Amino acid sequence: MTSPALARPRPAVLLLLLGGLVVLTLVSVLAADAAGGDNLVLLDAGPAARVGAPVAATIADLAGALTLGGAAIAGWLLRDPRDRARVLTVVAAAAGVATLARGASLAFSYAVATGQPVGSARFGSDLSVFLATDLGIWLLTGLVIAAATTTVAVLGTSAGIARAVAVLAGLVAFAAAMTGHAAGDETHEVGTSTMLVHLLAVGIWLGGLAVLQILPARGRDDEAVVRGYSHLALICWVALALSGVWALAVRMNGPGEILTSAYVQLGVAKAVLLLVLGGLGALQRRQIADGFGAGTAGEHARATYRRLALLELALMGLAVALAAAMSSSPPPAEAGTPPAGTAGVLTGYPLPAAPELTAVLTAWRPDPFGMALACVLVLLWWRPRASRRPRAESVRLVLGAAALVLLTSGPLNVYGKVLISAHVLQHVLLMVAVGVLLGSIGTVPERLRAVVRGRWWLAALLAVVGPALLVAAYVSPFLRVALDGHAAHLALQMTALFGGMVSAHAVRVVPAVPAWRRLVVLALPLTVGLVAGLALLFTDALLAASWFGATGRTWWADALADQHRAGVAVLAVTVVGAVVLAAVPGGPRRPRED
Image (cartoon, rainbow, N blue to C red):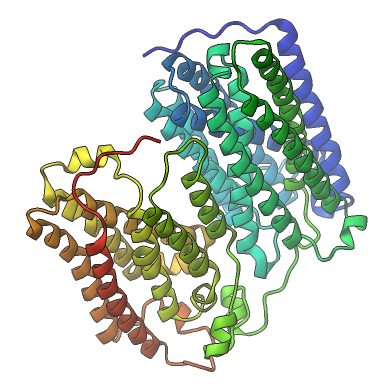
């Protein structure tokens, strides 16, 4: 399908948009200059980097948001192919702009990191060294994925292409979040996780609202589309509020900096803008509730809604400009020292107390990503206009979401940094408890049913994929990478979670009759779990020995004995998990209309 030609914008509209972009970039430059102050690193980078960094960041953030939000709307909300084609044309252009802006950001970041002004004789002389650092790797990764996003965006206008672009744009946001080294050492993971939630939320909210405004009236005012977007926007607003406050808290040394630090004051200004945006959103939802009918009241509601949307876009653009200024400036709490002791140097956290009952029950280290994911799952399940949910499935969803928060923020998250038994148990429970519970609700995707239909052996292979990947991660060098890097740590957790969901779907898609087929599908992941548990129990080779054998524990000092405990835990959870899998609903089910 070819993209229909977009109506040529009026010159006045183009000038207005260009003028708005100039104002936003100017705001970002002035705000970054105020936040940076007399920082010597920024001064050494030269005027081009000091001015160019916030400008490039503003353009990259705005274009990235348009790419992510536009692709999400086109992939999941729009039903008219003409509207989807129009949006994806804009998304492709935005993706190209974002790629160029991220390339410029990489150059300016290099100038700031090395103190070499752009255009100087030595500029670029040690670029290879910079690209080998964590910051350089993630900047380059984001640039490459952004280029891939642009390539995919021009391949077509189908819903599948739109969803692929949305996933790639989400990965660009992930790479950008991993460059957030501004938090202190003990809060680095919180800083990067809150940044990831922040970037995803603002992208879907801002980009989605922007592309809706370019649609003709039939798409822009479609009540189903508007209501669906409105619920997404509410989720994004909640995510932005919580992640923004949390992120600012770990980047400041104390409440007094609200009065003394320009960086913190920019964060407070963003919070005020978010409150105003929340008020505008409430007014918009009131117009949606009134309905966009054909009468005078409907016309008034539509007109009011659109005026509020344009005002909301302007304020969100201002918030993005302030955020770009903050990302180009050092926060007050940037410098930090690792906690004392071997564990502090290795993990970035102090060694927890001996795992006695009281210490375990009170251990808590909040994980923003796990909490945000749990909230999103609950809000999507009980979205407006969804069909009535079965009580049993709703209970399983709540239990799964609660278990997700507990496993990613509770005692296993604290002790998993220093004990192989806690680390293994956390991921096994993410797969068996959370993944299977979440995979047992809703309907099995029709594409999965179509692929597996009549081929029960394929369902058996799918059921074993998650456990096999988790085992492979533990016996490979990836485990050490996941212990040392937050991105790989999140990837390992998501492998466990989605692996459990796939296993549950594979069991559900197999008809209950004949029973032996379903038993075979259940037996394969069970066998993998039993073999893994026995291997941990009887092996004398310590996994990630350079980590778990070097934490300096004065309690449970024998790391190999702790690995044997992990084997016992895996065996126990595997048996319980097999019982749970056997109980999930199976066989063909009539899909429910949402």
